[in-house]
Image (cartoon, rainbow, N blue to C red):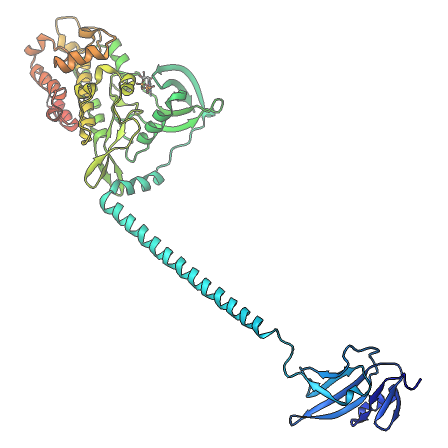
Length: 473
Ligand SMILES: Nc1ncnc2c1ncn2[C@@H]1O[C@H](COP(=O)(O)OP(=O)(O)OP(=O)(O)O)[C@@H](O)[C@H]1O
């Protein structure tokens, strides 16, 4: 049984470790272990040399994995310990020089990977910074370019933020009778908090017209006593159709007013003057502080698209076909779905008011002024319509019933072909009553009309000029 017991070297130098002698019988420098197969050794490193502190049977461990005594750092207070499982194995101790470390190659790979990641990160950040700098530069250049060459672009942006459409709750508006019916909308009379309003409800096919009209009404500085007042836009809750809420014009359209009323010279001139002022304002290019109202061409001016208020003045309405003339680098330009002149466009505008160049399709598309000149032609025809209902211009005779331009010559339902033949090819215009020659203002009226509807677009008057001429009349 003695042979079966583990033999360990025994040496105790430290008085505190004398308890190890109880771990088995000691005979000289050998101990036969009682309860363990493990020997243990405690060495001290003194001046780089290993010196025995304690050699004995292990008191704690029953089994130990290593056959020989191998000690590994970290060493605590220069004490080195080991356990081993063969006879007298604790006599020699070997030190592992380094703590267990990952193999060299692994370490290198790890370092290389870290370096690569750092390099990639630096590259990535550099690219990001370069892109950010370039982007900033590009944005700055673009902004400067737009500011220098296309002022309207900027203004449009700021203006659109400044303008806030007044919110109308359709539930607040009580819709009443129909005021008028156009190609794209039905206009209803409405009551909102006790006041009369007009509500223009767009048909399915009128979305473009709605957008266009809203854009024009929402332009800066569009509030003017000669332009129908815009009160807001809404969607009908039941069928979500688009609608615009407008000031109510008590006398309805100029067309229906002229059908019902013949007027004195003074009242007639009030209609003419206010109408021309409205167009002059619409055509104006205005800048006030940092807001800009570009010129707007109405493009569907007719006596049905002019309304009459109780004070006998006119306001312009129906901007569904209008074009906003923006300026860029000194050149006027327009972008509008309805700017192109097509048969479709002619179909929806009142044919009678179409200028010869528009009827022929011979407009100069490189210039935007033809759109304004087209309005002047139509204004001339409306002035003729108004004067044809002036009792003072027919003194001593009967005032003719209201007539649309060319109605007498070409019937009420004038066709495009007959109009082109009459207006364009024959260069004829509505006839001016012979008796006007005798009137003091007669020649002025005649001259004004022919300067509005001249075949040569450049010979036509501008709207402010018409206002001045009317004043002198
Ligand atoms: N604010 C208003 N107050 C009174 N009547 C109005 C008002 N707005 C429009 N109307 C009446 O409704 C008619 C049609 O209006 P408007 O011209 O705006 O509609 P539209 O569908 O755009 O017509 P168009 O076929 O000319 O494009 C006018 O001719 C006028 O008789």
